[in-house]
Image 1 (cartoon, helix red, strand yellow):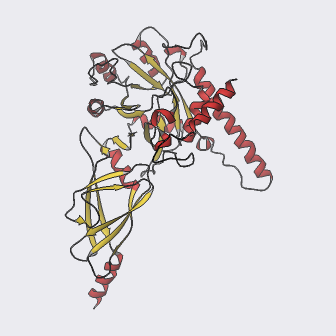
Image 2 (cartoon, helix red, strand yellow; image 1 turned 135 degrees about the vertical axis):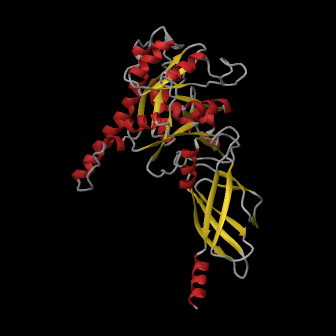
Image 3 (cartoon, rainbow, N blue to C red; image 1 turned 30 degrees about the vertical axis):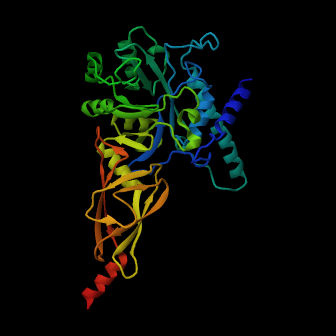
Length: 412
């Protein structure tokens, strides 16, 4: 019966929303961003729920959703204290939802290994022995410490065992998570149920936790909510900037993925695709929140991501005029919205330009006179590095045909 329910849930996930204008197919919905210099860009969701607390699905559905979205890591963070389905699904072991999710991935790995061995026996290429790199999804053991304010709801991921965190004192629970080496962060700090004005503010308890090194991150984005105040807290107190789905129902329904939406998530810049490297990236605060086609993070992390995503594919002048035809390639999932801050204007656009995701956009630059090198500067409106603050993308366009022409003139 459970398998039938899971099959029906997966079937519902594939049904397109009526009237959707931008339908995404299963093979194109994966969240994709390029690596940045020195790091792999990993897509992570650090806040999800199953029927083992107040979620609506079995853990294997969370895994299947994550795989469809191209996630690199997923944290199962069921509430420790809040267990509304406990009469129907009794489980004294609070690790149970993680165990079930991890078993799904383990079975997938076993199937892939068997297939690889069969191919190797038939004389095909040997299987790659780097296991963690080949794991389709890294599942993080986590939990949500569910308390009134302060401190509110706190997530701990990369735990070794959830059960010892189940103690009466919220401070003791957080200390136990830290004792296990967990990454600990404050959930939805502007949640109206605990903060009626929806303004995130540190309490004395939060300040003490930060001062003691027990609180490492904060959700700037939770599901469909964003908080300027939480972003400022992260910047002021050196907390990791996080975006999470906090999913309880189905990802497709909550974020309208068939209609072109995407789950809220965190981009993590790690030295490799392993739990150890992800933990190190968390500790070093190398994160960017991904929310409604907006990138939110520190300048030192957002800027390299913009520059890795955007590049000039070609630049050439029209015949007998000084209009420069520039092709800009975007290799990321973000549809970048740019405001022109250059001295030039454009023949085919206003000062606002959209570079669609995974596409090449042509721009007609009125340079005034034909030349070899031109500098453009744009304000990136769908990137945020502080409240109401957007980074710039500066690029130098070099026209190869003009370089050759100038070289010929100098030779004469």
